[in-house]
Length: 301
Image (cartoon, rainbow, N blue to C red; front, side, top):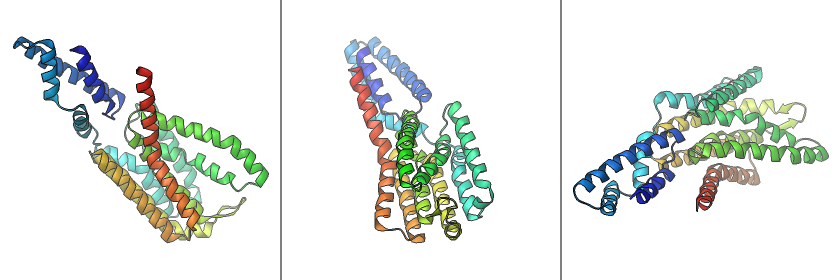
């Protein structure tokens, strides 16, 4: 009886996709409920095997139970939705009001990093993940700037820098994936937009950095793209169903790509690169989650 119930509860837990504390609490409650039902059936005259089989049959498919529990516990509050949308709103205001060129960008990045560290050290709440994405923005910008170094220095620096960045991204992504890979995709949501606008604005040269004139022309469109990201995050946290959350992310990235392509004259190879980056930011966490779960199952068996 115990082995059948343990296997069922393990199957439910593998499909829950909630944070560790919530999963532990839910599984404990479900186990207590199942044991009480089995005890009642045994007192009614059923054998241990019959009672366990009937109880698990009444509970239903482990995947269905996990999905129902997920939908009941995964919806964020409006307060959490607002907190999660704030970094996108900050960047939307930064460009729409053209504050980015008067020193506010480092302030916003500092706030994002401090908020991400606070959330990371306080249980990784659901509003944390968009802040994590922006806290890694300096890492992304530095990597892009390395491409504009002289050829010899560029290769040396990139060979040293890229492995470090990949390790950092994988470490953070794996930590986030332990709760739900969709939150990793949510964390990476602004990356294609940031890279796209960076490329669209081009670089004037390695000393002056961004092409200021083009950024000023793009500012309203950049603000609009980040506003779309803010609405996406709010909808993501308020929606219960996982498949709808994924649809929201896909639609958001598609709209952002359309806005970037409409505002800037991107070449076909650049468009393909951005599409690949979007696909990687959405499918990469899912594949990594699959490999991690497969590895843990093989390790157990």
